[in-house]
Amino acid sequence: MEANDVIELYNLLEENGIEVWIDGGWGIDALLGRQTRQHKDLDIAIYHKDKPKLRKLLKDRGYTDVASDDRSDWNFVLGNGESEIDVHTFIFDDNGNNIYGTAYPKASLSGTGVINGESIQCIPPEWVVTLHAQAKYEPKEKDIQDVNAVCDKFGLEPPENYKKP
Image (cartoon, rainbow, N blue to C red; front, side):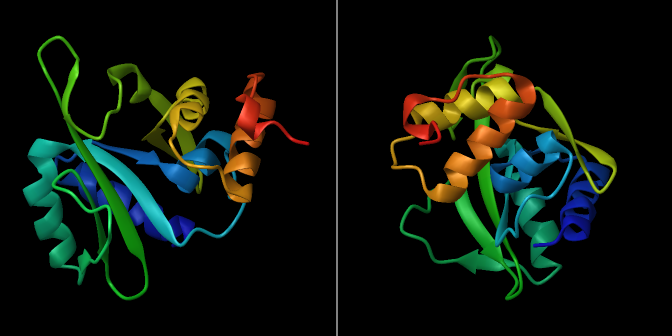
């Protein structure tokens, strides 16, 4: 997945009334304002109500479901043979509490970053660190590098299991 593909997809969704936040590796790069590594996919977060519209838009562009062990109604991967989009959906109640889907706290959907000179919505730095600290998996080297790059840029303390040796 290249930066111009990310922006093209982001703009397509926004132009079709789908509010989207960039997460994962591209979200890190957006916060840093530069691409730090190659990305095999794009992680996005959208409101669950927009899932049918997203599926239609992407189906029209050749994207189909990719088999995955952790697939659910609110987390699934779509691919077109060249790139993959890891989709995370959620629902908030009237009080801003997450009541369904990927457990994004409302405040975690408040960041902005830059990809290819364009401003996009993403997970803010403090939430990148918090969500990684809460993750139930052993961080990979790329995760450690990503979190430390965000912490260095924004003056944050990395979680214990993400500290550089």
